[in-house]
Image (tube, rainbow, N blue to C red; front, side):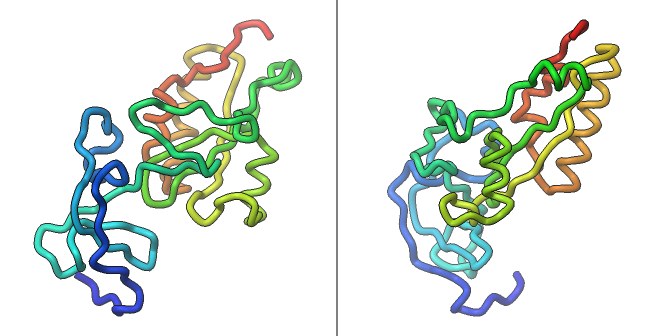
Length: 188
C-alpha cells in the first residue's frame, strides 16, 4: 500500500451499523449487511474497514446515510428527491429540438446518483456553500428524445457510456435502468 502520512488519516473510528456497507455490495445493496466495526477514513474522503490502513483484509466501505439535500438516505426505501432536486422533464420545445440536457450529481466515494434540475446543477458547479458540493460531483448528459427508436436507444446508450468514462461516474447506466428510450416520443 502507498504511504499516507498519519495526519491524512482518521483512524480507530467505529460504526454500530446503518452507516456503511462494502463497496462490493454496490449496486446490488438490497438485502446486504451493514458494516459494523472499526473503520478509518483517508484524506480523499474514502472509508475502509479496519482501525488503520495497516490492518489485514481491509475493504472499501461506502457511506449510505446521506444525500445532497442533507436528509438521511435510506437504501431500503429509495427516496424521491425534494423539489429543489426534482429532475427536468422535457418541454414541448425540447421535443421540437429532438434533444435535451439532463443534470446529475454523483457522490464522490460511491455510485449514488441523483438527477437534479438546472438551477441546482449551477449551484454545484459554482460550489455554492448552501449545497453539500464537497461530497458530490455535478455532470450533465445529452439525451435524444425523437427519431428512429433504435437510433435513439443506441445514441443515448453510447452517450451514457461515454459520460461514465469521461466523468468517472461508473454505475450511471444502472441508475438509469438502461432505459435508453426514457422520454421518447414518436411524433412530438
